Image 1 (cartoon, rainbow, N blue to C red):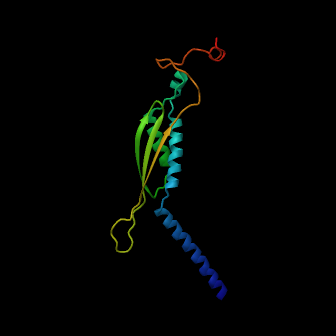
Image 2: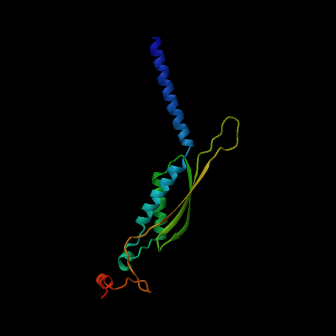
Image 3: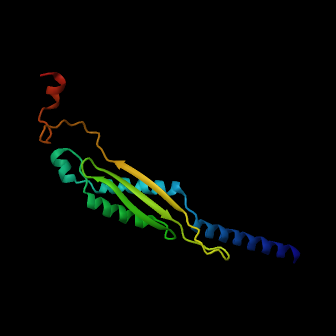
Length: 158
């Protein structure tokens, strides 16, 4: 009976430690997790917002700024932690060449310990900038269209 009572207390201690870890995880956040989340969402949103009709016509990349903002907010809201408050700021959204800068301010939940009335909050600010480019080597005329010289005339010197 004595050994089974010790086993019971070890199980209770293990469950309470896991409970404390879950509660503390809800109040903590890491800058690294937020950074990689923002980076992946920024890249996916920029790729999804490319105007492919403009790309087929001119060979240059162009991004729709409104579509980018909508895609970023949608994708970001699908994967964020519900226990935190996020504030999104968009800076320098350029359509051509596609570039964007995003700032995300993460605010953990407020907590009060004992008789302390002040809020114990932590704000983490992450700023990520991205530029979308192509590896295609294209020369353009002064009015913005692709030049009509073929590859052999440039390479062979004809």
